[in-house]
Image (cartoon, rainbow, N blue to C red):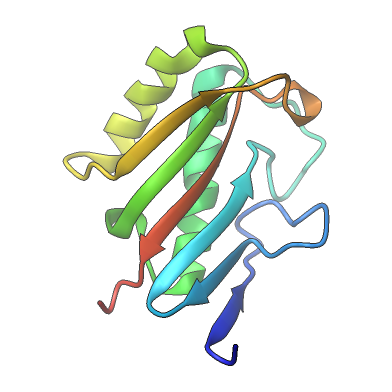
Length: 130
């Protein structure tokens, strides 16, 4: 498939395995799982769930920007949460960050995430030029 483009940005945590931060195909951006690690200091403390949610969305914005998209072009987001009782805080951060834009979304409770992160997300977005 020659119309695939791999996306990489220092504004989001570097992949820890054999995958890309995102892949663009046919005007769509597919974003890999993003954990709330500081891309400039991956071993830094994660902070509370609100800080982690803000970090994940900031990283997502960087990946989408590098792909030629933005948070306003999000189509779908899957959020994996280690503690479902944190969902209210995470949802509030999403609302404050995305404003009136409401992508399709799923919330999935999971076993502990890497380094006991509170959440991880994946996303699909349209390119901004579309």
